[in-house]
Amino acid sequence: MSAKSAINRVVAEVSKYIVDMKNVIELMLIAMLTEGHILLEGPPGTGKTLLAKTFASTIGGTFKRIQMTPDLLPADILGVVYYDMAKGAWSLKKGPIFANIVLVDELNRATPKAQAALIEAMQERQVTIEGMTLELPRPFLVIATQMPYGAEGTYPLTDVQLDRFAYSVDIGYPGRSEEIEIITRIDELEHPTIKPVTSPNELASLVDQVKSVKVSDSVKKYITDLVGKLRSAEEVQSPPGPRASIWLYKGCRAAAFLEGRSYAIPDDIKKLAVPVLSHRVKVKPEYLADGLTAKDIIYKVLEEVEVPLY
Image (cartoon, rainbow, N blue to C red; front, top):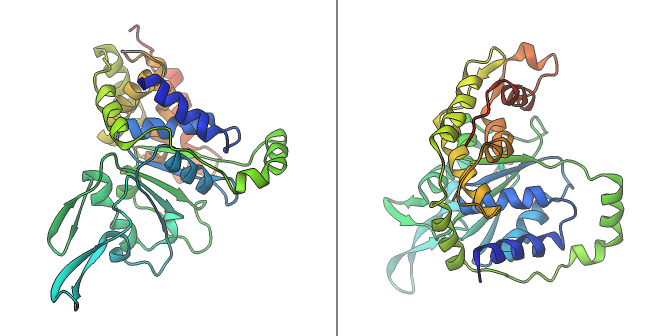
């Protein structure tokens, strides 16, 4: 199966059961191809969990779901060493983090201690249990959903935790026509028959192919100009760090790959600016009070920074 065929099949299969979210599906593919992680934000009932489960089932491999709750412990995520009476020896019981696709549902309902258990896994694709360092499967993707900021019973993610997510996307309520389609097809959507259309080995091969996409010096400069402009913006309280530039670079290669190009262009950067930067930018309180958002600042910077020829 060719790379383009594999990608098209994933998009087509997921789109059978997810109404009007092609852009989100493509972003999840970009996350997979760049070995990043993605945060899905939005109110309850907007299809975040269904989207993540459908995507995971479609791409094959192992899938685990972690329902985050305030009483969850790090060992419940990573695993634990225990004494096996039958064998008379210590054994390791691996936690749900050991999977190709890990759905972390309602991440900000867990305490900071439980949230922190994910950091090593997300950054280094390994975990440490009782001094033992264990590799995670490849490919490895964390798809996390988050309750709206400030919702009852939630713990805000720290800047360090947020920075581990390569991309974020807001999923809002569907439009009227989309909602009519959802309720018309609800019996089918609630019990989908999802077929895997690719495999972990094939995806690992595509990850390697994405790294061969060329990024010119002018496009690299465009990335650093955008991030630098954000850092100096008067409205920004907490600016994006170097990981923002890194994920714009990695993401633009995957975006070009999805389009069938062997080189990145400035439009790839524009497409990914909000997903990469919005969760890394904190707006000063006085500007928040006026209704200004991180997305507003990003759109403003995109208009102000000169777009290079490639």
